[in-house]
Image (cartoon, helix red, strand yellow):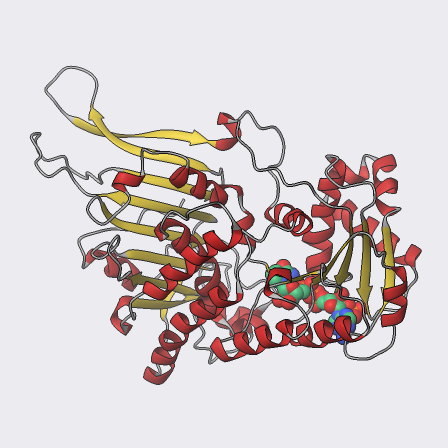
Length: 482
Ligand code: NAP
């Protein structure tokens, strides 16, 4: 087994927004998991920060309640839970004021990594970064972690970058896209760059097209007001789907270092061709049965925000010219399913009779559920009665193949531990985020100018008819969402 194991350094992790939803559901449970498997150094500590007036024991009680809700295993192991809670502190700070910062400075140690996780609204990023700097809390070795959304467009993303870089260098800034923490997404790099099998086929000569689908079965779930100002293009395509596209399309980096990997991703984004309005379908879910419509969920009867996007993207470079990438994401789809399908071209000369419904060779990388890889092959259908072809899948579910028991490591856990390792490979660099916005902005501007209303689709379906047509007109079809 080959490994690049960078040790987790002892740390003081300060979570701004420690009483919020993300901290409660993801960050603190993730930290508990890593603690439970012994990956947290003895000297590690977690300091919660928010405006709520409470002391350390009240915050610990709050964390304990959150863990019992989101980590069932925590409730059953009181000894472990109490050792974890012993590492937790709390300091009351209002990010927009100047009180509380000296108390925060006083609790931090000089000889460990300081990491500041900004699990707060992006409008507070600049204020917090500046105060960490002005109050002498941020050191040259400190790290700052910021959550999505990173901007609403290119201008706002640039402004956030300027704000952060006034107090932190790029090598200290960790912009989270939790998709990059998913095991299969990282596996994409292993699959492509640790095997010699794929690289000769990984180009327009052999790949007919690529499909990237991120389908959610849930709707906007209480985030309607926020989501209605954002939509699927900004919420999913500009970041998560773009990251997946980059990992499929990038050139092999010269080495597995954060900047070598991210340089290649930026080049992909820079090679994306302008997308014509006719190559994009925006959708919005309609009511069906007990399911409410998007407009009802979002509380905006006149909303033109898209809860679904499908688009055809062309990459203008030597490797991919002529191989379109079809991207699709939506809410209230028929299933929660994310996958990437690399669909290969047919053999140049077919000696067998035409096979009804043939779809051809494909490598399918499933992100959720059941992370794994499937290779679709054509074989002879066994048995007598002539030579008939059939398509079969060679399937590998990672959990089975690797004999993994229990929950796979959550994406957040992996990424948080990378912060303490000082490994930025799975975090977006500032220029990468800006490049993705520079690509997305004109697309959004185009449809805003055209004043188009999104196409309707039934809640629980595979999306609007027009999205099917996007593929049909190219004599291709989407894989079923299941
Ligand atoms: P949230 O539930 O509204 O929590 C916000 C947190 O910020 C609370 O702890 C709040 O505590 C604190 N806060 C607000 N104003 C503050 C101030 N002036 N000074 C110090 N603390 C302040 O938000 P969230 O859902 O956890 O989201 C946090 C961030 O993560 C946002 O940027 C969001 O877009 C992003 N995100 C969230 C999710 C998710 O699933 N929730 C997913 C992806 C990204 P007090 O009121 O006590 O100050």
